[in-house]
Image (cartoon, rainbow, N blue to C red; front, top):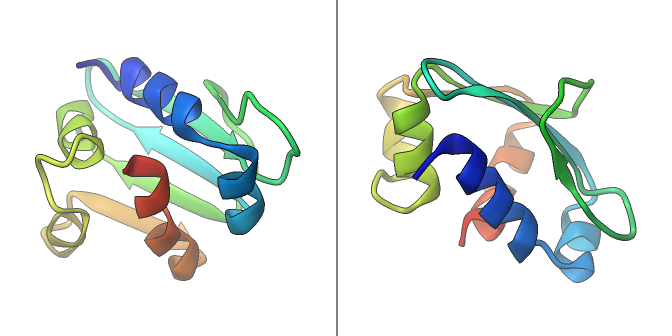
Length: 105
């Protein structure tokens, strides 16, 4: 699965109710081959919520390798373990990073 497909699937799973509950913005900086920058705006009343672009966000998630992000997003790698191993970095509001699990599931 590609990074773009992961974000496409995430976007499809976000409902107006989920977006309203989180009500914030995220920047995803995914490195390595197949990576890129995606911006999630969950303050909008309707989608699309995730776009491939860079913008100012309240929480920035950085993952050095695209394959690590795909593993995290598809449940093959535990996000907490990835964070402890330095595979995922969070800048900004840490509580928002914890809410990401609702977007991934």
